[in-house]
Length: 231
Image (cartoon, rainbow, N blue to C red; front, side, top):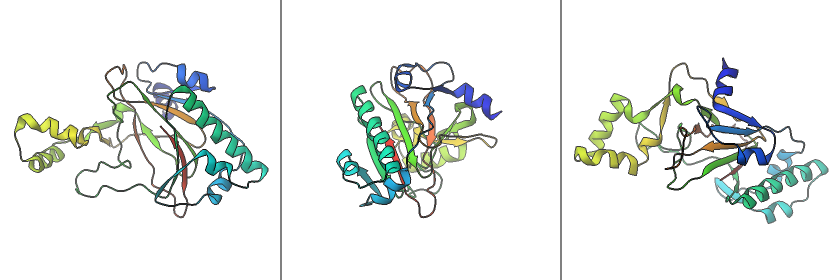
């Protein structure tokens, strides 16, 4: 069953050109450039210095590292990915992650990246991401999730929180990003994005012809940082 879900939601490609030129269609809203890469990405993580919970790593930071042959291979892969995405017109960011901030303001709904959510943009764009080291993200088929604001008990609590007119309620949900978050159904089967694969995920924008891809950040492994490219 999992393979069927994977085939229905995910298109697998084998080059960067295919990744950026393949169109989303039907129920497919995620494209995976599947890669089996050599190189020691753990060595890179071990040599980088975490300044905050999320530290952006620049090309010059990577180039300044003294690495073994395997570490150098990993560095070249990352630099090539950053350059390919930049040449494509994207703005990639390489992050060394301890953890993201948690949204614990309300006990009945969360809007942090650990919650299943979709990305939204006012212009046509896609989300690209690759986890080189550490825990990797999950995506979820759209028919295996329910929008949190449609769950009656959550909706009622949001109405109490809003304490305004019915006409303004939908705007309130959108302004606070409540309308981007999903609850997985009981029998849902998330797809883990794995390590070193470069992914392109559909975003909610005016020209989008497919449903946006539902995804979430993983809970980090104890004592382990993540190395993530995202844009």
